[in-house]
Image (tube, rainbow, N blue to C red):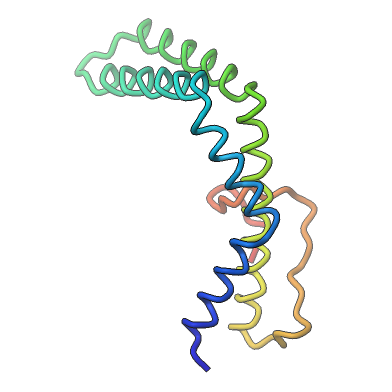
Length: 137
């Protein structure tokens, strides 16, 4: 049994899953959205200006505060875009699917029966980043 071959087959199956297809479509829609791309460019410029100011020997706190406020305004507008909301929801679905798959694999590596093992359900939402969470294995 070739583990790498099976992994590639799993990858191909994931790419056929409706959650992955919705994520891909949402990503493509975002890439075509001129307003969304302009907002992203503005956000990146504000971040860069903030970092430049913060790296100075004596950063101007008023400028930094203004950059934070501008960032928050742009980010709120960015996240209010319907296409971005659809993308974020689709990305969350894919993240949850991948987290579930990884939990099953982890259980199997630890000796659980691959045919019947089931990850524990948690009463919290998982965004895929474990840096601030202790709820998963």
